Length: 364
Length: 72
Image (cartoon, rainbow over all chains, first blue to last red; front, side):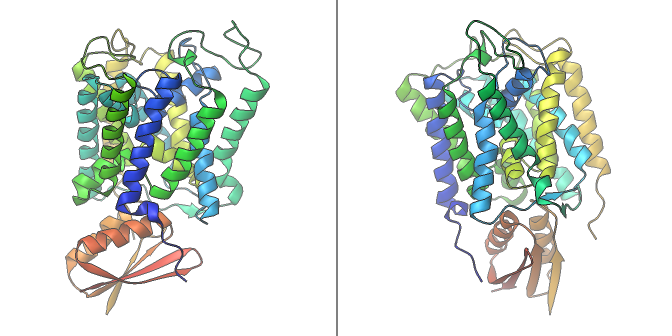
């Protein structure tokens, strides 16, 4: 029996989802999220890492309900449309390290591809370097794909295994409800809350959770992926996913103009630095890692929501990577790259190249 | 005569790459692609159609999709 047609997987479906995110992300900024960071999967996972004390960068600590919403929204969609398929075991540990280095690269640029798009749509010229780096990294990844790179097959597993990351997200939400921010204090018994900086800027919990759930639901249906956008364009000359990403950028640009949030230039952009080479190289590292892992940070959350345990491990790798980045001075700040950021990008590129060259076993 | 591409347990872009390789090999007029997730099913269908192949049939058995594509 043929199931109901998935309209979100059609061209206008993916463009519609891009437009939807393009409207909501700048609105979240307008309502209180950090500038040019309405939604940034890397930044928000980094904030979660800070909230549970995996790093102690005081300005970026907050459990971001958007991330929780992404996973749970996707979970709900997957169950409603019978697409929840618990699976695991495609070179899982490799995916963990790809997640770690993807985050290290993202925090050198200061953003994931979603934020790259939102920074561009806010007039931040540095985002051009970042997005070019992203495309370069993905292009390297497509060369590996053409030469047989793959991480092998996953296996079906227990339903409970597919629930691990969704359960973690529910746990984080419960923690947030039991231990809310105490006014004027940066820590309660359990959680850290930023008093100043990006981590202190956030919309109300219900709004961010609601927006996260909606986007998670729609992105699961449409398979929205910012890495896939460029990968499919480079690999197959296919514009399907790219049209969604482009729709996001153009819509966010228009909404920023309407809200008065557009400010063109390179210097003095919010939560950004102007070291062009490292904006490019940081995103190149991330782009390569996303491509080798098969999805951008957002897509990995949506996959984890539909039961993909390998994607869940990539997400955990990113959260741990954020801890490493801030604990060892790898992350950038508006002043520029961190003391060991450059070395980390070079090591990360070498690790990704090693993975790309060595994991090419032919699929039987 | 139809060839079979077994892309079970693989996620994008592998199923599409394997399908396109088989199309490029040019040995057969009909290919059956086996995938185990909805996204791969959509992607393989889309890729085959972009190469001018026709979507002939999709059958689901125990969570595995058997996608039959054929030359026009």
